[in-house]
Image (cartoon, rainbow, N blue to C red):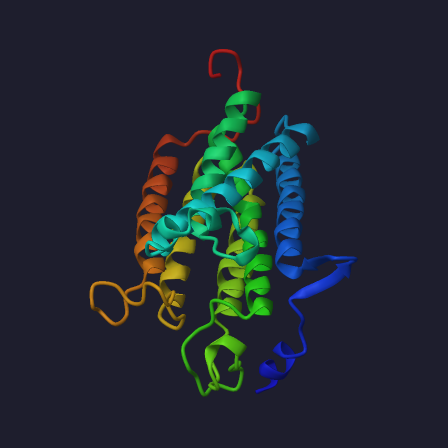
Length: 277
């Protein structure tokens, strides 16, 4: 089990500064936002949009806040199983983990929309740009989940199985890395390849593709990933997880957005004129 040996050589703490510990999870969030911002700026330039560095930075800050707040709220509501009703102060204990991608997505959309309204930017174009950069953040985040030894999968006899400290004395699917590959690498390659077409594809193409493919990938990976212990499988199925339930609306929404994008065929724009704003 070569991957198991590699995993046990890792330390969730990247480095220590006096009494403070800097963990890979925090670095992953930072690296994800920085790299996504660089990709957004590059694609915006290729599309010849009138977006400045300040525009991109302003949007990224609002999106980052939205991601963190939304991810935590969704985890508390959908995965908390009543725990936070009894321990409300622990809602703010972000250092203990507990973040939901689906909530982070909603938070990013809300934060990004607010930024676009403030700076008079096209919401759909910014959403498309953000969708291209988002898989990079997902890749780093899932790798950090692997280093932390969380969100692991079912038992496996495959040669890349990993024995996680909290998963018992059995080898398990490194489902975090499956997600890093599909939701991160594959999704980014698809979206970035689509972004290279000139003229650019219609507004909504990229956020629609992102929603649809992420939903499909996450739904499939949930078959080898164990559900959160406090929830287990839903409706007595022995296979349906909360992650799958939350992913199905993403697939449907992605298909609808793609259909509307093709039908409306609106070009990508940066700043809106006075009438559009």
